[in-house]
Image (tube, helix red, strand yellow):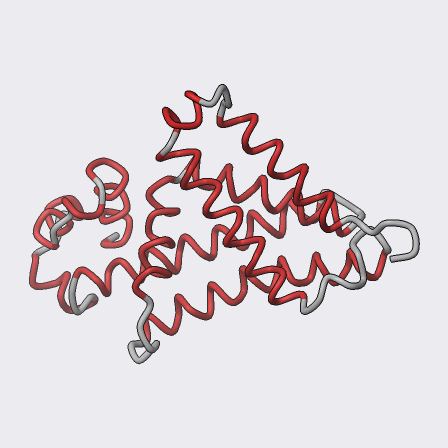
Length: 197
């Protein structure tokens, strides 16, 4: 109930405006009870982030399951990431905040988020490995975990640019949807196995 209330407020007003007091009011609980379960606002954000990462992993699993070839799985995962941000921007923001300020995973909630993040990465790595095995992805792309991080960084940055720089790219005559499609096409071209690879 506490995390549900915090997520509701996050979606409505943004994380910076959320307070433990208004979480307690929204959840219809005492403020003191909130602190029994969550040390502070950062601890509560970790609970939201863990949920977000678990949802993201499931979205990736579902997207990949709709395709036979690894290259198609990878592309579907990328599209699922974009859709996740569009449909749940506050959960996307929670993940971004966690990754921007991730500490040493000393706290159990941080460690849980890190484990959930590793599970998300695992889905992408598996799709890359399957693509290499089925011949749809180049065998010489290198370490699949490293490629996964590169794809994640590329797609995350693409989403950020699409959200925050719409006017700038519009001045160049580019719509966000064109930017996304062109970028996914370029990534697919770079990953796709060519004859003899």
